[in-house]
Image (cartoon, rainbow over all chains, first blue to last red; front, side, top):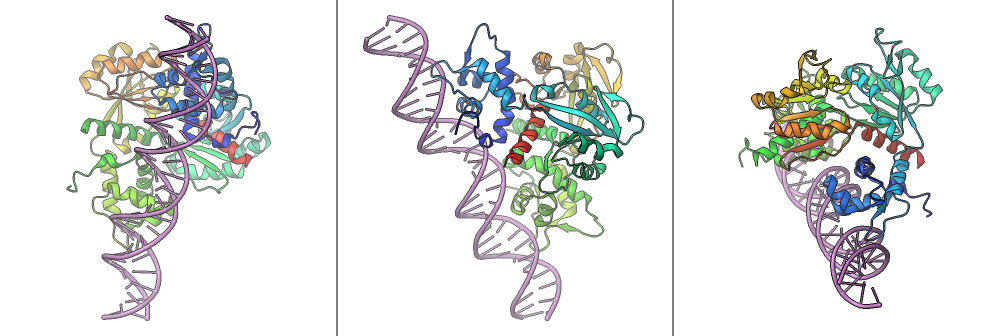
Length: 217
Length: 217
DNA sequence: ATGAAATCGATAACAATATATCGATTACTA
DNA sequence: TAGTAATCGATATATTGTTATCGATTTCAT
């Protein structure tokens, strides 16, 4: 197996979730001062296990690290960005321009990871035709046609729970292959569609629960 | 071990994340029609493993299920709500009333899990003094004093990445014990503070990556 | 009653992930 | 140039979470 075609599928979801933090930390280093960074240093800074960091980096770095010095910062940034899709931009559409939808449309963070929300859709006539975060808002009726023509394959659902299933079906009809779902309901979609649920209330509940656990002991 | 003082700490984060979906599904059932629901039924509806559901429910249900019939719906709802903190409301403050902060302040979902954002803080004079989602926005200077007096112990950070660390320190000084952090940076806080990171860009990146993996195979 | 079907709880096997250990390699220092 | 310390990669162990299996229990139909 050549370096170029690493077996990316070997990277776990958890690793994937940590990579952005590595990138973030490494970028924050003064590159005039250091040219390389080691796994133990990153681990300490992010409160992670040294071996875990090393394994994660091994999965994405094309050159590996050197004993005693670590990984070349410049190379590592390149590798991480490449891996996170910096070079092949993935486009997404968003449905539901409420508070949360607007927040996502205005969110700058996506660009850094090779992701871009290109257009939005909503039922509400008041927002249709306007621009939010620089993206135009279209009526739901245009969804199918526009998605097909743009070849977009990621859909973001930020509509109320009761409309989510219906919207997901629209998206599937429009050829969407992956859905990022913010509605707190389980979506029924064909097997080939990847769904990632983002239940904000549940997330906060988890935090609150963890806190209570800790206080109890 | 009595029923009342179950060993809640045995519940994993993953389980905790699934509980709201169970609750949601069970509530959606017509209680005039059914009085009990079984693990296999829930599993099928939510596309999960039957045994997993049973184990999860066993961890929160006070009475257990009956062979052949399953779990009593009414009891189960009570247990789940109890477990998720329905009865002892946890209060939180939010810092950073931008798009995302506003979205969270207006988000109705929290109430169902015994969570409540009580006030918000921001640097920007334009939003200070206004109400968002029915909650008043105060200047940052008031944070420490107000949090102390209200005895709030959860803080939500929705400020730009560069301000997050500073805000986290403010929150810690204000006696906050748990932080829900939306800024894509690792926060350095005392060990006793629980931090939960919510990196939206990373989440979408994970989805996008998953999709690409799937398409490759 | 009795037998069949569904479900439970418990335990066991499996899978994924995280952490620890260890020899090999490199850089620095005396 | 030899010794020491830091780091790497690889391998082994431990931990955690998921899935399968199995005997026991309950309901329902005969």
